[in-house]
Image 1 (cartoon, rainbow, N blue to C red):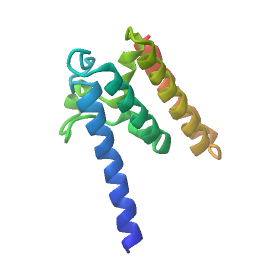
Image 2: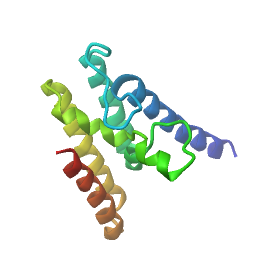
Image 3: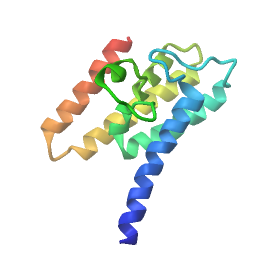
Length: 138
């Protein structure tokens, strides 16, 4: 019983930790917008991205997590910012920040490959979703 509680607690902790880092250091919560460099230093953004990379490596489906506390309707979901908006930083002028985003994407793809090695259909669905998102950004 205590092991099950611990696993559920860690799952909630990962979700909360990721939302906290993304919303407080990288994104504003409004779709298509990111925090300015005058608001948050680039070095803090890089550190937040490195933490998020490790979280996504463990649980890649969090890439599509919305940043709102609770979502009530589908219409609201369309306007909500998701973790995938981190890719807005691919157009940032700092090379370290852009590189951190590329590492995040590579790590997420690697995790998808490893987790769905038995089920190619699941991998294809997850990977095509990620590629579609990449195409929208570029």
